[in-house]
Image 1 (cartoon, rainbow, N blue to C red):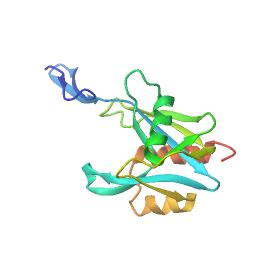
Image 2 (spheres, rainbow, N blue to C red):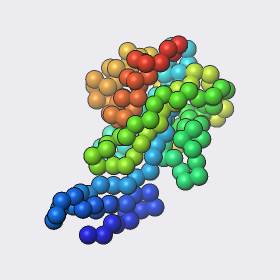
Image 3 (cartoon, rainbow, N blue to C red):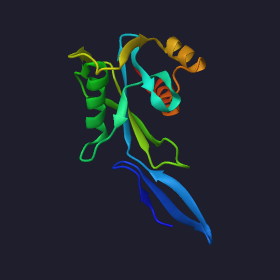
Length: 163
């Protein structure tokens, strides 16, 4: 069974698993994510997500392009999706696999609270300022649906000091 290149960023890998069985998974691009904070509020973006046909709340994030580091990607996504720029170095939170049973994707999260507004967010994206409690309400009400974003946020508030 051959591997199949679906797009420039996604390939279906068919790996022999047992004598006559194959394990199928997707080789996909890595992601970066930024959790930006202004005073006691986190910047959250909302946009329509086609696969779920709903508006979803999430943190700024995106694909790490070839020849781009996760840090460069995080800076780019922060600017594109929120119109903000970090005046200081982004602090790395953690890197983990998003769905290791089916995808090769790793997501790397960053945190910043030293921001300056430099432009408008890209079209189709709204920005919101929410405190920690508001974000938990969005999660409970299934409006903040990205599990890797939720995991990154929980890791941040549990393990990072001086938020």
